[in-house]
Image (cartoon, rainbow, N blue to C red; front, side):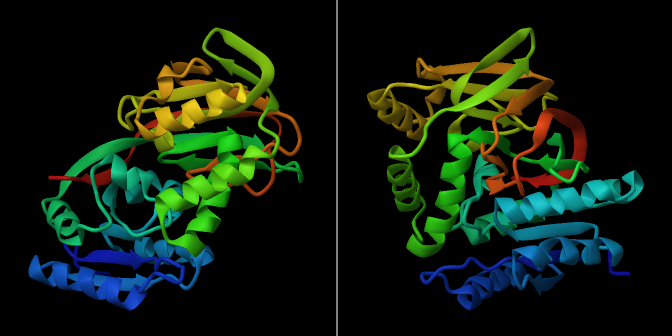
Length: 312
């Protein structure tokens, strides 16, 4: 077993021709040593190895686990923690230093990819907050009952497709903004509405919708008022707008005023129930679920279940 004050750091190198994993780790290592932080680092070989390495850290007794990666790696970490016994989970504090293709949850707290020293300084102060997790419960095509926890959001429809393309194009382009616009331009010529059945609060919506975002946090700009510690989920239901209104929506999204769009219907709730037509993509924290859920699925919230290091 390791010392309680020793950090376990999982390094998830960013892929792409513009990345330099060795230099990036060297910069973080210098910051950790400058703050006299004792640590052990393991590096993920690929995205599929993250859960195995997190389980290893939990089993070896690390009380502070820091993800040097993005939203997907952080999502894998919280799902591993939720599989642990409650007393084990409560003994572990999770932190993040952004280094992924998408780092929306880190950005929510003010962490910046280009400010590694600041991130280490904040984390070293050990300001801990218990945060909520969202949870999607569904049945897959093999009739297996599944659940997946999320820190940020579940996207259903067009934005799930954009986020999937954005992840792939950013690995090639290296730029967050370029990848977003390139993904959007690809999708302009594709189908932009999906038949969905949504039950939220007292409303039942059965309509062709562009996208639905159910968020525990900022939801990649679609739920700007959501916070991961109030026990609620924020929901943005986006009806199919006209073509020019799509460009207006992108502008408002980038300005942080997405809820001002006339096609967006916002909600705050404890649970959402949905059913979607076959082929509608569903993403969790920016990564696609393996296959569309079959039949009705539910999205709820688990209150204050993860200890998280926030800026001090």
